[in-house]
Length: 310
Image (tube, rainbow, N blue to C red; front, side, top):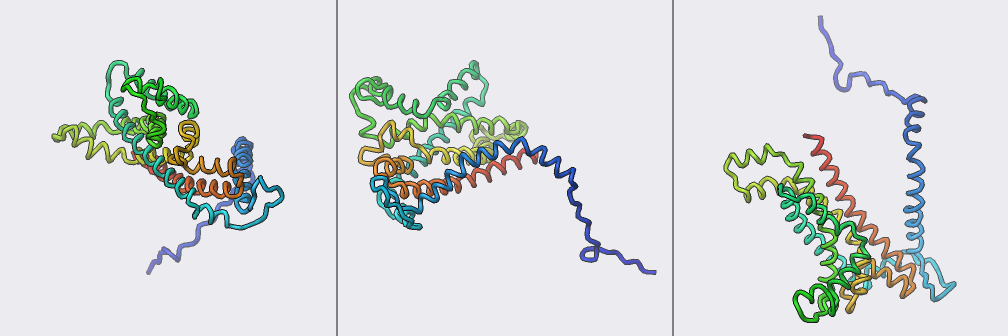
């Protein structure tokens, strides 16, 4: 007597379970409260972006009424080949990279200090978070007038002299203001990573004879890598769109030394009145931001997987 077993391809297919009408009704009942927010988000964000895409294919200068015409991708070719926009792109990269790197390094140092217990830690943490809560325009005005002013600014009041910091060091002036405002953001993300680290692992490293520097470089720093990447990516998404600090502190100068892409788009729209070219530049910025945001979402997903694996 022989017996046969059905495995692999011989196994009968599993019946597909189709959702019933009650299941579908229950799903829509749960999703219905979110529909107004979804519709509002589409109207506020996606419709203007679609209109921007349409404008980017038009040759439209407000100084020449009635001369608008469809030119396809010519505005994008202008954006990618124009010397002004290439210089603005380089300034954007320098401004964003410098601000993000400095903010991450300072945030890492402050997070390590705040991870230790000392009297008044809560007050110090609150004071260090405060710069991130200041409105960007208010922060830029504060740095321009209260800190950089050559006559009564804080820096010249401490160091002496009458150095015009904005004129002589324009990029450094903007980067310093951005680092002051974004370091607390990086500090909070890294501090969350430090406080989620396993104390048993650190204690085991101490028992095995590892010193503070070895523990930090071989255990803590690799553990913090996703948090450092997340802070850098989220900071890049926001800082690549910096307009307030450039407009308020330097006006893009001197000699277009700090003119980044958002400020160049502003000039193209409200000084040259080239709406189609400005729209094409805006689309390029949005595409670059989406690329960076995609990596940020992957890092966030990896952090969630790490938490689920514990």
